Amino acid sequence: MNTIGFNIVNNGDRALTIVFKKEIGHALSVAIINICKLVKERFPGQVEDIIPSYQSMTICFTVQAALDNQFQLELNRFINYSINALSDNRIAVVTDASQLIEIPVCYDKVFAPDLSELADYCHLTESAVVSRHSNKEYLVHMLGFLPGFLYLGGLDNALNCPRKTSPSSRIYAGSVGIGGNQTGIYPVQSPGGWHIIGRTPIRLFDPEWQSPVIASPLDRVKFVAISEQEFKQIEQRDNLRALPRKGHGNP
Amino acid sequence: MSFYFIKAGLQTSLQDGGRYGQRHLGISQSGAMDANSMRMANWLLNKPLDSPVLEIAIVGPTIRFDHALTIAVCGAQFELHLNSKRVYNNQVIHVELGDCLIFSSLQQGARAYLAFTGELDISPMLASYSTHLTACFGGFKNRAFKNRDYLKIIGNDDSNKIDQCALPQRTLPDECFMPYPGNYLMRCTESVESSKFTKRQKTLFFSQAYKVSADLNRMGIQLHAKTLEFDQPMVISSSGLTQGSIQIPPSGQPIISCVDGQTIGGYPRIANIISADLPRLGQLKSGDKINFIMISRDYALQILAATNHWYDELLK
Image (tube, rainbow over all chains, first blue to last red; front, side):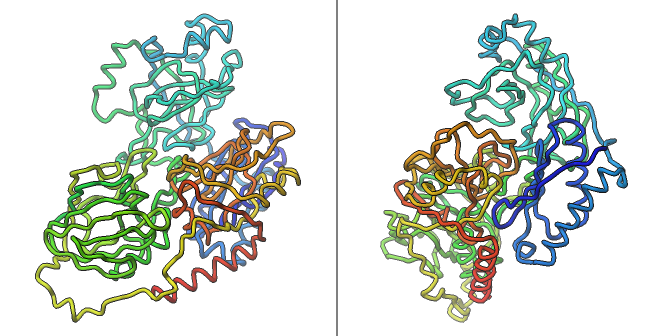
């Protein structure tokens, strides 16, 4: 792996963000998730949360750790050491936990209020939009925004469509949308500005599951087109969740 | 043994010290917006300081107690009555079977915290009793209280009167009576994109008073003043969003991120409110005024250490 350039910047008084200079992609996400894991293992008591993102990771400290100068110095040293060691292949990169998760999506009109508008904008037929959206593996870069929301990479450029000028006030949980060059699924009902082109009957988040979310960073996601009838059947099943079932996935 | 909500109030929910270690799953910390008031209320009852409490926002509830127990209220000042008797914040209050606690007009601040003896008959969800009001999980039935709800409390039966007079009754010293004047100075340190803002934008941001808009909740607080103009749109890569981050969206009007806020944000942040000032966010209401001042991170941490020390000494 080539050297990864980075800056460390403060994110308020109890967190720092490492901003990487490499382009968004699988290689960078692999590096970020590995560094997250190293930091978490090295400083379990001092680090409260680590939030990976496309080109950054944010490390949040406990109050005690924020006030501990020695820890701040050690953390800085450790960040430099682990990023360089990863760049030089002195540390093995772990990616074997990655899984392919199939998410059933019904693209029928009843669940896709914005499909025709998006198709018009992209100069495609509705069925071409559906096949371009579903014939693809997406990379889970990270989770965030709302509980269980997956930031996916790999949307077909032909489906790039700016967000709506006025957001919808109510988007149902499970709605699959496109906003700019991103696609994703709304895990809970919320307002939103993305074009809704389908809906999944599976839940993306349930605090009572052993792991409350369906995917981890570096997993791959594929949307599988289903009929309205199949949607209703899956919806009725108990303990709905995408397969494969996972134990604990953690960056 | 329960609380019966004759009126639930505008937004009364169960909160505690919050949930941590789950932001990489998109799960924000939740918990009391004004954690200091929560701690003081629990301290009055000799409970662990992060124990679950009722967070009562803007319009308070009317609660009937179906059992004798002991409560304490801290934070925002409401006109409080126990039946027809006036009662006050920052004190231990004994209630008897059938007593009604009435939160009338709000006098200062925005959120009051009610601690109670006994334990909840609810399992914590993702290691916390807090209600995540955006994602609708945790706390009491995954939501804020509604009229005619019963909140069951178990243990610590006060009705047999284990000679309450003999128990040392805690009181908070006068310096705990927090004034909420509706006009605040929030101290800030640098955030991820602070250096990307122009001198003109920063000068305006740190010199003008912002008005808290009506668009505020546990997720975020929208502010209004003169627009911070962008010469060209500032495009940034989304990254971890922490509580107290002050984001400037294309509208040029700041949004402060709060406890139920999103864990990753895509708007540039001009500054971040220091940890020691975060509890104040819980006492903001529409129409309040805020000014911001930038301080160094070292100074922010000195303030945090001093504040912690002060509370540690007080709530020993």
